[in-house]
Image (cartoon, rainbow, N blue to C red; front, side):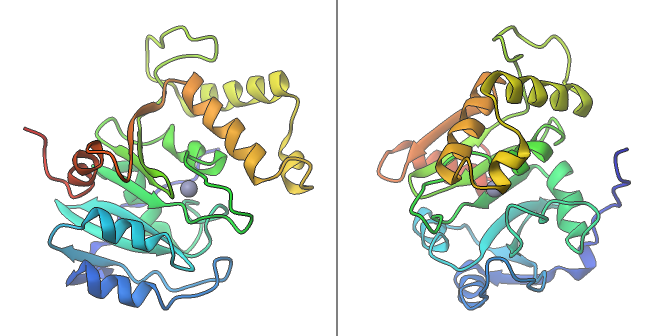
Length: 234
Ligand SMILES: [Zn+2]
């Protein structure tokens, strides 16, 4: 059963602050796995590529969404586990994630140095449910990657209609069987972060979800940063 998702609560968002100020607040939040307050801010002015890159050094991850045309920054402390769960305290962010024009978040370098340059399986579970207007981005050590809702089946054939969550879950089970892993493979550490990342990357690719991307030193990075800033392409 899909949990009921309530509309966002924009009144709780703190009015406009320059992103540099928001960064100095978020950089002091510590404890990736600990609970941190959902202090959300409206971002004043465009965010630069360098600022996004600097966020990768924070102890927490940073999410960017859109609300009523404004860019909103949110700290995500319980990364990988609960930050997009509609039943947790991040309810407003979760709801906005599915309907916003934009949902982007940072993937800081993992403890073992693995670059998680793709949507994790947890991320994929909500990325298949976002609205057709929602652009999905992962900001990572190598650059920025943009994703879209699934466009193909595992065998590469085009989807003729939008994938529902049940279908997506069935494809995930099919992929697990093909690759010979289960959720427990991750929990027990049988498959580490690098292995999980490789599997999640392949799953997203096979479902036609990888739209575009650029490394930090490539010219294409600026177009992706403009999209994150909700600046329309010419
Ligand atoms: Zn993620």
